[in-house]
Image: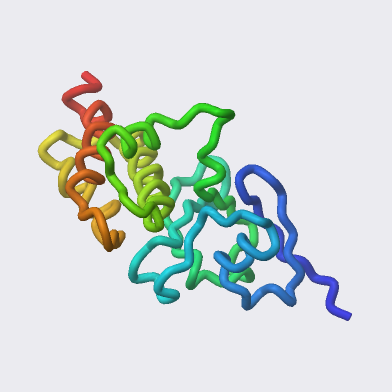
Length: 174
């Protein structure tokens, strides 16, 4: 009998998956085993990025985006995983979520969790390593430019992200 476990953290909670779930995609594990359905499954091959979650290898490590539809559970040992549900802090929306609403960034909302998580990672990177204002549009493009939205376009997402990221540039921090 196989009693080995795969240990990782999801939204601050220790999680142990049986090795029999090792081949399961992270998005399926989040939905089926943990009841976290905010992360969306769309294309199944990581192209659309609706399945984006944030991960890091320890509390002091940099955040990075991870495509949960193509990441097997057995590759998660020791990682911290953050889903869109992990962004919630009580009943209040984060400034990130408020900016998306204020700019009417989405219509159907299916891609929004992926955009939120990619933006959250981008903003954390900018806090750790500020860039100049003239590099900001390129940083936004690099951070969320491959996320696909099939109904609203990207201008409003970019406007919301730019609003949040601008105060993190060197010119505004000085």
